[in-house]
Image (cartoon, rainbow, N blue to C red; front, side):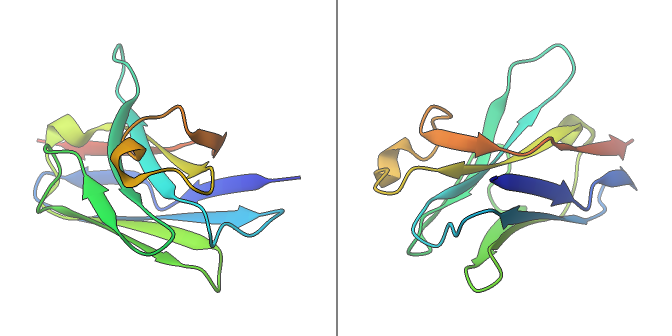
Length: 126
């Protein structure tokens, strides 16, 4: 059974940092893109960042320069380092694993991601 489990969320003041981690089990995702999405109350789920199997990274404009995604294929994990957090970053953050062969230009689209975690809450106070 495939599982993605996020951790590292919490409450932080504006300007602070958090590091989210996602541990995958049940199969290896070394050849799959991995992504982070978020959903704020009353809003649709939106793309945050993704990393291809080869390490190519893409970010939403709203987090570019503040967030960094990384992966450790040996550990089957993906991380999201979030710096200079803003109140508008408050949301539930979801880890997702995509299909092998997903082209880079589709990494920001949620549809190629077949596996999703339950989410971790990030709250940034002003």
